[in-house]
Image 1 (cartoon, rainbow over the protein chains, first blue to last red):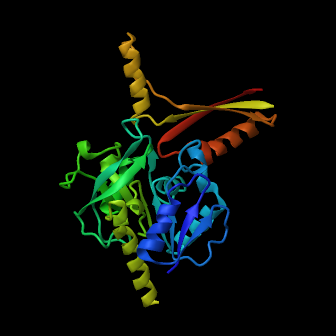
Image 2 (cartoon, helix red, strand yellow):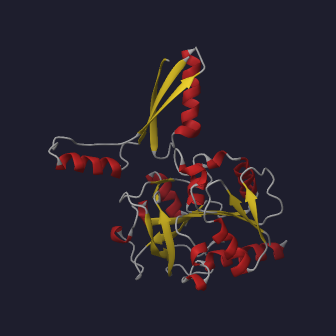
Image 3 (cartoon, rainbow over the protein chains, first blue to last red):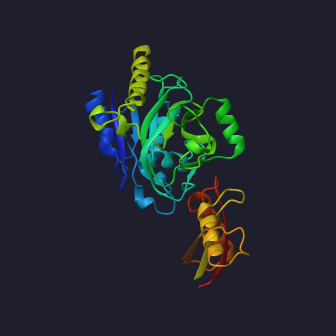
Length: 235
Length: 82
C-alpha cells in the first residue's frame, strides 16, 4: 500500500502529510515531484497544503498545469484515491477534478484556528471511520477557503452525498454563525461524483497524531487505508 | 506589437468582501453616495503579434485556460497598439 505526497514549489504541509502516513499509519510513503510525468507505484496520492507557485494569479491556478497533475488526472480516472488538503483542494478545483472554486474568506482575514466540523457523509473511502453527524476538530489555516459553486452544482452535490464535512460548532450546529469563511452551505470538504477524489480546506494531517494535540484527522487516512486494503483483497 | 489589457472581475452576484470593505471605508470619509464597489485585477501584456484577430483569439484562449476561473470570474479585454 504505497502512498505519494505531491510536492510543488511552495508546498509547506508535505512533511506533516508524510508524517501521518509514515509515523501514524506506518505505511510506505514517498514524495512525488511536480515535474514527474510518471508517479510510479502508488495507491493513493495526497496533494498537500501550502502556497504552490506563490499562489500567484489564484491559489492553484499555476500548479494545475504542472506535468505531475496530468499524471494525477490519469491516476484518478483509473479510480485511484486522491486527497487534496487546503492548497491541494484549491489545485483540485482549478484542475476541474472537483467542482466549484475557493474564494477569499468572507472576513478578509487569514484564518488560523482549531475548527469543529460535522461529518455529513460517512459512507465514502475518505470518511468511513466516522459516523454521519459526528463532530471532529481539525485545524484550518487559509485565506482563500470560501467555497463557491453555482446553485445547480450545489444542488446536485447535495443530492449525491458529495458534501463530506461542514463547518459547525461543537454541538454540531451548522449555520451562518458557525461558518468561519463564508463557504456556501458551510462546505468544508467534498468528494467528486465517482467518490475517489476528495478535497477539504481543514487539515486532517495536522490532527492525526495525538502528540500534536489533536487526533480526529487520523480517521481520514485510516478510512482511505481500509478502502485500499479491502479493494486490494478483492482483486 | 500589440498590447492586451485584460480585466478579471468576480462574476455579478458573487459577494465581493474587498469591495464592500472599500465602500465602507469611502463612506466613513464622507463619500456616502458610492455604492456597489467591486475589486478586480488588470493584466497588461505585450503581444509579439500584428494581427488583431489573431491576438483576440489568443487572449480569449489565455483567459479561458488560465487567467480567469469561469466558476467565479468573468473577464473582458481590449487590444491596443503597443
